[in-house]
Amino acid sequence: MNTIRLMCAKLHRVRVTSANVDYIGSISIDAELMEKVGILPLQEVEIVNLNNAQRWSTYAIPAPRGSREICPNGGAALLCQPGDILIIYAYQDCERHKLMLEGHVASVLVADENNEVADFFFQTLTPENGQLVFRERVEPSVTN
Image (cartoon, rainbow, N blue to C red; front, side):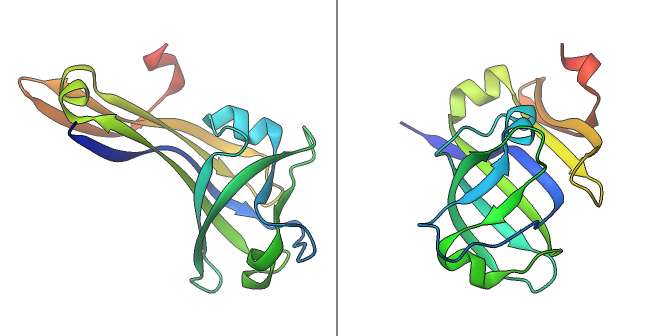
């Protein structure tokens, strides 16, 4: 099977609300934000801290809905502090031949300073004439 790993969900510029070194692993993310981009509980995510260039991977767990919580746990709590700005990515494996036929859609949520939704859009790969065309910003109404 010929597979390729593609970004499928991104929380861009979310702010760390707390960091809990005593919790056993993971990152707690407001359940509402997870659902908006399609990140599932226990799904692997990669994280970049824009304040200090630290990168790590872990798994997501839902924080209380509407809390706007972003809380790295365990060892990851040592890689950031409250107020740091993170980018959280989730990926999915896709079959290359299916991708060439059906394309791909990734959800992107850009947060404001309070982890509220400042912007939401899709990045897409669309099959056209035997090639995939990347579109940087597709509004939600266009893909529904």
